Image 1 (cartoon, rainbow, N blue to C red):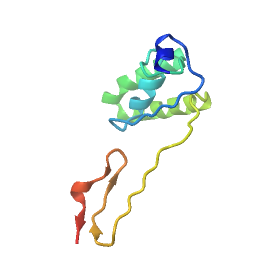
Image 2 (tube, helix red, strand yellow):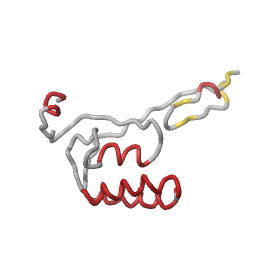
Image 3 (cartoon, rainbow, N blue to C red):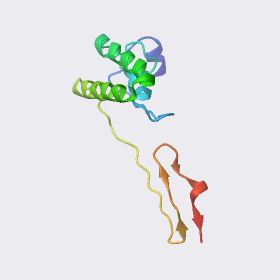
Length: 119
């Protein structure tokens, strides 16, 4: 698969995963669906949407609420274009005993072990 991508062949189906290093819309949308994005494996390119992505990035510092509205608009537009069709979403389960207290889960980091106590 990697050799095909290096030759410029766009795959019809790709088993790939993405996990955020920071939970922000820009971390997924801009990095994977902008025209010149390195991780845009399907070669999707809509110059109008890429322009909106760049605008949303500019807005993030001075108008976070406006940027959030623009990212939501982009999310809807990209969903309507069916740029991706997900195969599955990973899901994990943690089992804890009755002796465990203060269990906290972070969607990015998982169980916060430093916060758990055991009786």
